[in-house]
Length: 257
Image (cartoon, rainbow, N blue to C red; front, side, top):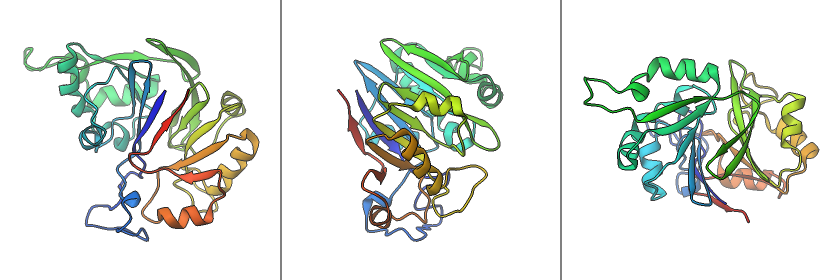
């Protein structure tokens, strides 16, 4: 299995509009961040997690012209508003791309992007997505790939986390239920939100203190932080963090047997 971090940034990206780098060194390419998303490739199946504003550039950078399924973690705009970039992928595929998410996300998403599922303009635009509502806790199988889905507290909504064997992805999370932590037990590698890195507490995103507590409990071999803000310089984070916790970066590739 191959995992590519398409984007590791926060909702505004780095640099933000207006060329705002915050405290990030603009000379370090690992500080140039698009919005958080992931590509999982497993035995011939290519799965996209979230469709950010930057999706077209992310797919082109990864030289990726095929998507077999889409998983949406939640319906905040930085995770769904690049969805139109999948139209051309779907048309080359010859059929709508299956999209999986929970009911609340589908309700919000479908309200804005109903045309993605039904087409429009008298058939000029074909449907390019196929909706699949899934429980917030479930085992999903996409072709030959098994995915354990679990709920995450994102403050204003519930987001979904995804586990692929020994690897898990937890974007936009502020806290976990005990059941969701149990779903993460035994993981080897974890990519987890830490947009609240510099805060004592946050209503929507994990703080570094929380991530360290979760890592102490779950004991993954490696943890990578994502949803990195303009105030999270890559080299500074590497100097501050323990060796088993590292910042992710756009284009980072992980491979698993």
